[in-house]
Structures are given as structure tokens and as C-alpha cells.
Image (cartoon, rainbow, N blue to C red):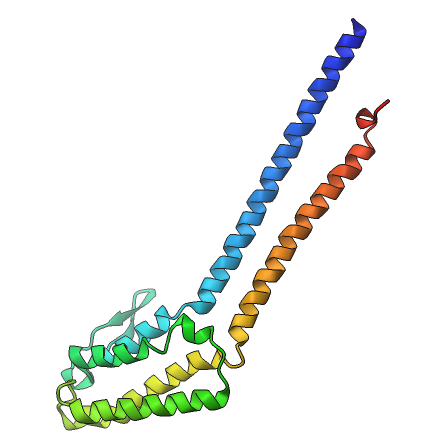
Length: 210
């Protein structure tokens, strides 16, 4: 009778041990998932270009930042002389910049010399487009025409900032290295957890045979 009670007690203890291991495994999976999500968010932030494109679009529209209580918000320009481009002009510029300011550019591999060549080409083409269509694009006053060089130069500088992140493929290398380190951490943590469990069982007399 006592032997049966001992067997039952051993089974109860084993169930409790397994329940504890399951809880630990769930916690480990939860932490690993959090790490992967955090890493994915970091990668996404590094590749994000929407904010830069929005700033350019608002610049073309003449929008400006102003305080609204505790917040800083964008406001539409009421003075038409300070609106450099009409809708057609804004769309023309945005059609160009969205081809260059994107994650494909950031993840590419360019030399500094090649970047300068691309910027020169873009600058020449933008200048030609504006020169041939400036009135159609909304630059229909002498003052607005004086902003022509500023529009092109600002556009080129922001395109350059995106391209410079791709020099030598550095952004792509950094992201790949980040993935490798993250995966290694997860594997190492899982391996360490398993080894600790094995060691604990070896030190527990209840797990010994014989």
C-alpha cells in the first residue's frame, strides 16, 4: 500500500515538474517574441522614409510648423506668394523624389562617386522640367521664381541624405548583422535553458534510476 502511495506521489511530483517547465518555456517564448518584435521595429524605423517625403511635400506646398498649445503642428500657408508650387508642381516634384527616397535606395550599395553622378543627373533633369514648365507648376510671380534654385537644391540634398546611407552597402550590412546577433541570442538562450534543466534533473535524486 505504501509502495502505491509512493508511486502516486512520484507521479504528482513529475506532473508539477512538467507544469513548471511548460511555464518557463512559455515565458522564454514570450521574451524571444518580444525581442524579435523589437528588432523588427528597429529595422522598420531605419528604413522608414515617409517622414522625409512628407517634409518635402509640405515644403513644396509652402506649409509651415507652428505652436498650437503644447503641440507643434503643420499649417497651410495663406499667403499665396509663399506657396511656391501649385498641385501640378507638387505632384511633379513628388513623382521624382519618391523614385529616389525609398528603402531600396537605402539598402543598395553605392560608391560616393556614383552618388554624385546620380545627383548631377537628377539636378539637371529637375532644372529642365522647372525651366520648361515653371508657370504651369505655379511659379507665376517674380518672387516665386526666385525660389527655383532653393527648391531644386533642397530636393537634391534630401535625396543625397538617403543615398549616403547606402555607401558601401553599410545599412544593409548593419541590418543583416542585427538579424544574426538577434538569432544567436535566441539560440544561445534556448541552449542555456536546456542545459540548466538537464543539470537540475541530474542533481535531483527523484530522477535517478535503479
